[in-house]
Structures are given as structure tokens and as C-alpha cells.
Length: 292
Image (cartoon, rainbow, N blue to C red; front, side, top):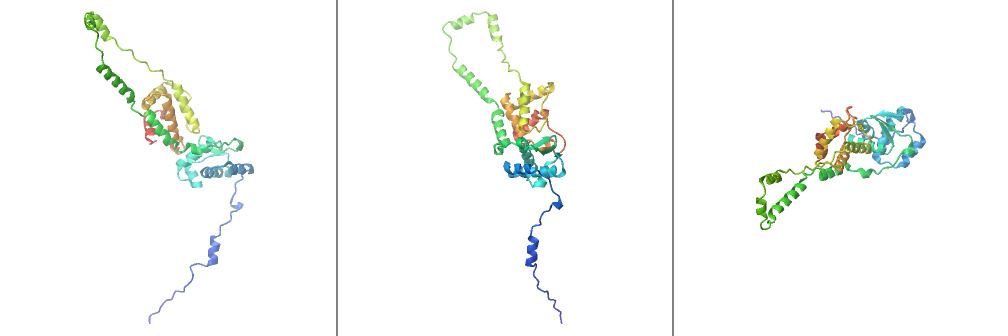
């Protein structure tokens, strides 16, 4: 006779046990705590940070005040891990927003909280939304043209002159034929005067770079001196813009700083981009194509 094994029917879980497992564990100062001054806590609550700014601020507090430090080196990957930001680029952008708002202080690779809460200033973060894309479009429109407008105008005028050349009065051609051959040769050999381009203001270009750098949070080294190598580099830069104007240079630098990634500011490897890198033709091309 075959033995039949019977499995006792038991519930998978008991209702009371399930409720206990779903109860949240209460946090305790015994597990560690951060001493945050009340004034700082109230200032954070009243300031009106965006959710992303608030999350990043908490990450900085965790890495500095929790360890009794004023400043510390915090990589973007650490910030993303601590506060669950989507990617390092957004972490870098949010961090620079807080630096411009004087909420965070940045010295080299180190960053910390500005405890002088009265120095904090609100900024319209939506104003800078998609700034890189807008700058790239404007740069492409104004400075990436083939400059064919002037050439086409010149060609049209030349054709009009050829087609509408007035006939000389009677007898005038005969007088011209009687002129000495030397006079004719002198008239035809006269070279048109070259139109001199205005001198390039190298310092003004460097100042535009410094201004764009400052507006972006001074993430790259400032230009202190213009030497011969940099003068040559500025000439190449203006040639790449196809229109050697300060307006085009300003648009380019704004687009450049709006496109910077953590790699360019030394946050992931130690190398930091500078002015000499910014004025390279290869860099201009990458900014123009949105491939920096």
C-alpha cells in the first residue's frame, strides 16, 4: 500500500507578524547624528530651494558637517550616490547653481557650506534652462555662416556695371586713343588700395573669456596674461568663428562654459581645461557641434 505524504496547510504569513515587519524602524541618535545649528536649519527651510538643490545640499552637509569639516572634496559620483541624482552632469550643474547663489563655497576641488546665511541669494534657475542648446543655436546662426552675403552683393554689382556700362560721348573714345601709351599703362597698372582690417583687441577677447568663466562659477583658471602664443591662438579662434567680432567671441565662450562637463573642471581626473584649450580650433568645432 502506497503511503501518501500529506502537507499540512499553513498560512504563508501571519497577519500580526506582517504588520510588525511593515512598521518603519525608528531612527535614533545612537546611530549617529549631525549637529546642525538651528539658524542654519531654519534658513534652509525658508529659502525655497528646488528639490534637486535641497538634495545636493543635504549631501554636502553629510560629507562636511557630519565629519566636523568646513570643506571636503566631494565627487559628483558620490553626490549622485548619496541623494539619488540621475547623473553626474546634473549633479555638477546643480552644484554650480548653489555656488552662484553663495550657498556653497568652492575652493579648487573642495566644496563646503557657506554658514553666512545672510549672504545667500536666490537665483532664477529656470532662466538658465537649456542655455547650452540656446547658445549653440545662436552661435551657429551668427558666427557659423559662410559669409557669402558680401560676396553675392559684390558679384551682383559687378554684373550690373557690366550690363549697364554707359557709352562714352562722341569723340571721347578718340581722345582716349590719342593718350600716350605710358599714361594708359600707368592707369591700368595702378593697384587698388588694400582695406586694412581693424587691429585685434586680444585683451578684450581674454576679458570676455574671464567674464563667461566668472558667470559660470569660475570653474576654470582665469587668463592673467596675453603672450605671443595666445595672440596666435586668438587669431585662429576668430578665424574659426568666420566673423572676427567680439560679439561672436562672447557667444562662443558662453556656449563653451554652458557645455562643460565634470571632466573639464578636474573633478574626475585632475586635468583642468584652460584658456589655451578653449581657443583651439578643435574645441570650437566640438562646441559648435554640441560634442564637447
